[in-house]
Image (cartoon, rainbow, N blue to C red; front, side, top):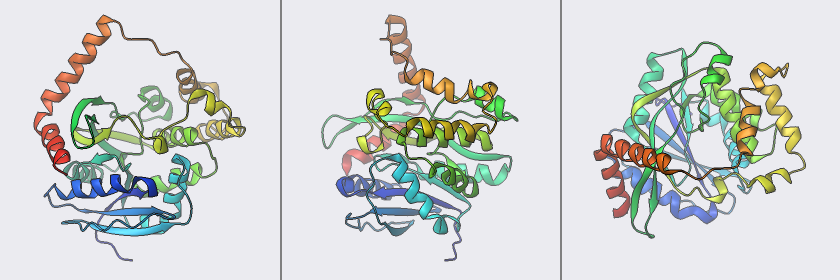
Length: 308
């Protein structure tokens, strides 16, 4: 397979979520910019192929001979598709109820082309939700990985804001390298965590100053992490945590683990406090400011979504 394009975006066709994939493809067609990426659709066993013709993009359909029950299955299926990914310079994953804007993806590609010392790039993000089955609305700003251009692993871990990294456009070789580690474990939660920390470990991330991703809220169960109680019932969990620790630092030094996996675990079990009046005011201020600064992009996205 010879490919002239640089970027491949990966999305899943999960049998019980076919309508979300169809919505994604139709929404993609509503953006008329010249799109310079291919879309790899990984079809869960038993899933019916979605036939939506792309105006300016090519769809590659492949079958995954198994069920997709969580994030670990998703990363495993992507890793099994590495022969396709290796034809591209950059890769990114998008969940079927999210949306990565084509022009921003091209901007991320251009940035990485011009900045060899960065391994990943994304941009601003926001949450949207639904009033009913046909009407959606802007919910809030969504925090993604911020620019992390420090030179050492320790510095980058200290600067990491805890956001999900795999929505970013990532250099293909790094993307596959991360997946190769993830398939060594089975826990869905730890799979996400390991992806994030390995991205930070392997290099610098840049955040563009325009909208890159729209994410639907609430997140569906298939893409979600389990509750704390259910999570701890996984008998292999601590083995997976140990693998994550060693992946971050082979020596398992407290210096690096204190600012990475230990920090994450402490937050995972921390009791969430209710917002006080000051916090609520700040929440509304940030929400409104982000909306006003990105008014036309968000308004156009919601309009296109409501018209599908």
